[in-house]
Image (cartoon, rainbow, N blue to C red; front, side, top):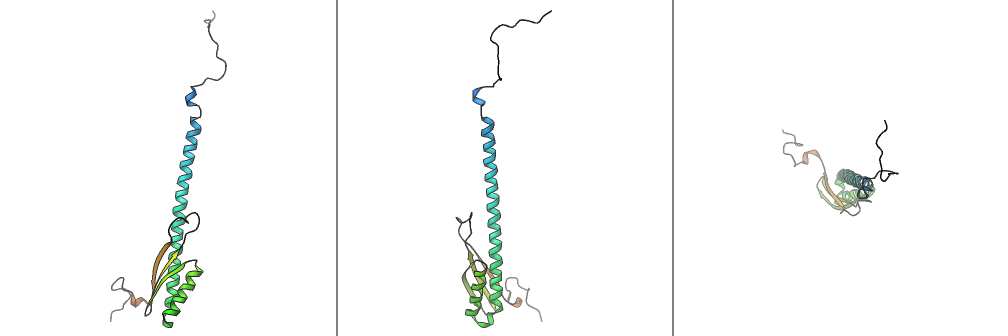
Amino acid sequence: MTGPVVTGPVMTGPVTTGARDAGSATVLVLACWAVLVGATAIVVGVGLSVAARHHLASAADSASLAAAAVADGGPRVACSTARSVARHDRATLIDCHVDGPVVTVRLSMRLGWPLAWLRPLALNSRAGPAETNTDHPGQGATAS
């Protein structure tokens, strides 16, 4: 017993699902790759901006502490010291205010590539003796 005899066109070559599906996997892979690259760029940008903000906060704290240490020499000496420390930390002193032993500084810093298109960061810092702290009543002052 032999099988049925098939007559008609004989298919030779690969079976295709249709011309409209050709290359769809390539497009899907490229779209996924683009999303991955975009997400990576966003994460890197946020990380760099947070690191720059922390660097500026450290620079502002250093400048205000250095200025408060020499505040007895007067506002000119204190602000000159703050400017020197800020410059060392790649920041710019915008404002310096000396009120007795308390020094308040405002520093600014331009961001580098790839965040150069953002506006400069600016932060304030205040330093002085603990007993001059008026932010939290009851802290810093001793009761007699």
